[in-house]
Length: 196
Image (cartoon, rainbow, N blue to C red):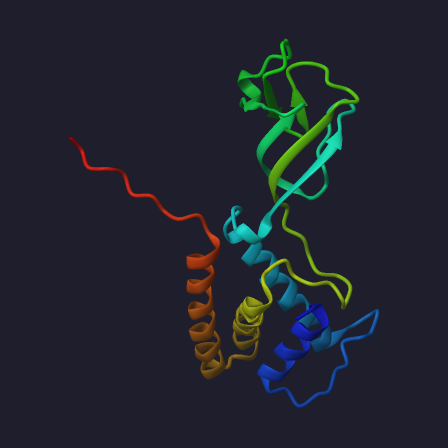
């Protein structure tokens, strides 16, 4: 389901009699609200946990001063020349070699403890939350779970429309799908071992 299809499905679930095609470049009124509720739900879902596995990606860039790719929400690993660097909090970071550490500055940019201009930096990271804008935009969430966005958005609509039965239906479906997402797409919780 893309953004357009999510909006259409939300419209269907609300039971509204008005007809919207959701292809307007300048939506207003209820159509604009439905689009906003889908986007709000998608944003809330992404920010619920930074480490959803469907937000994971890997990439590389050529270093030039300090740099952070626009799509990075949080780095997992950072390597230069095949050597994985250690993260140091900015408060404890010193820009002295040899190359061993990286940090994230308060402005969100990545920096290294040695000048590495023109070298290739490889990384794994979790993507930064992003809104849907074009009708053809597709959420990163696997296809079979995208209805969770609709159920979350339907709860907002139900509160707006003061429709308790619709809110109950949306909440039930949302809770079921969120439980599946949490089970399948978050790192497994590890319990501490027994105290000796």
